[in-house]
Length: 294
Image (cartoon, rainbow, N blue to C red; front, top):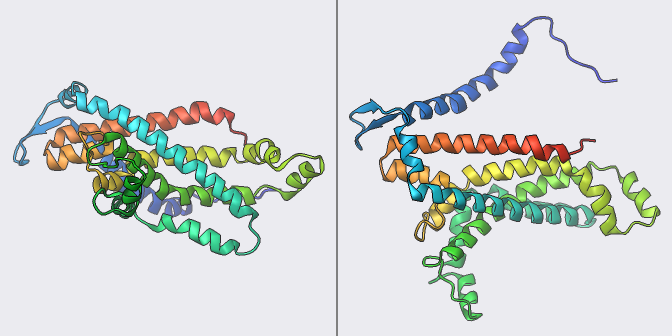
């Protein structure tokens, strides 16, 4: 029988919750509130004067063709990163779960990319695929592929998707492996005795039991693609060529820091926050219906 902890007063729970609440307020709610206030202000490029403009910054955003185009770019980029990070993570977890000898070594190697910052991951892939000095770029040129992501937007998008997904595979691998090891071995053994093939055991028993883990990782990977891939974009393509890889989070930084449009940049950050919250709510509303918790 499960035992529940009951507090006799409110002081002890308040003290225990205070540090986390303070961190949430200072680093999440306060910056979000500042962004909302800034999005309704307009001023000069030097920040010497500001004035209240209401929703003018938002109206200007949705009248900007480049900003609207960045929505489609971000949607494709996020979906591609999530799928390319989840599928190999699950595959590697299944393979590592079956390894008997040297399992610790394989798991350590597969987890190493997660320790690399997104910006560093972007630099590594940039060096590998640089049209002038990259080793893999030279191999592609030798194979007859005209590789130059500085000029080809599709190649640039492919490169940043691969770099961002490669960085996230280790994170997905860790959670999928934990989910696999939590599945009772008696279920697998019983299905094997019944004559189910390994492939059938995976799709009818293992994969459905991984549904909560898969749903959690889907949400985390989409949020990662929206926010944490700035370093990859900035170091590899700077949003180019011709804004082909300018996702929303990079445009927020570029318009605010380079373009010095602080009000417009704040409005973009508010829209981005609303989009991510909306996507997360939709996933919990519709996708979670198909998730069965054991």
